[in-house]
Length: 258
Image (cartoon, rainbow, N blue to C red; front, side, top):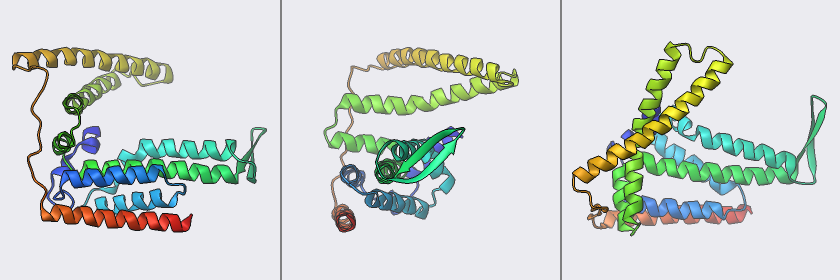
């Protein structure tokens, strides 16, 4: 299930988004994220998040898969929103009483929480858009074109490769624990979860040693050749212009709404 959600199989399909040059999409996503971070209203981040989701659904990415990828960030965004509502501001808009405790929600906190939650949602949706329309291998080669350190590129490539290996190990261990009633009650569940976590860390350490030794045997010298030989074409420039115009219009609307 996790492999299905976090793999880049959708990025390997042929559609109008996957055919756009990876460098063009990376530039757009980077500029859009910077714009979102400096936004003072929730409108721009929410619109960008909505457009990202629309584009992904248009290339037949299941909405369930998108939701599962965004589940953790959305949970964090909701928690931040609630914290801001109840702990920031001076103008109360509602009051709650829970088990004898009185809570007040503030107008300033609601707006500030919406801005922060919108930024989280907007930035995450852009990253998901990029990862679901561009294979990881292509992204890493494009990163080398931007003169990103080869060491970081190698670390990212190895991390991406072995994250799925560790996920499979964790699933195997969890299934074995379930067969042995390791999650039949709360105390056993906590103990089984602790054992699962420890086992995954040990597997990760063992895998790192095995991978390093295998790379040495294959002549690894500390660096690998990663390059992006594809040249910018006219259509790539047109895509970049379209992205720039779209982002400029969104920024103008954001300034108008402010």
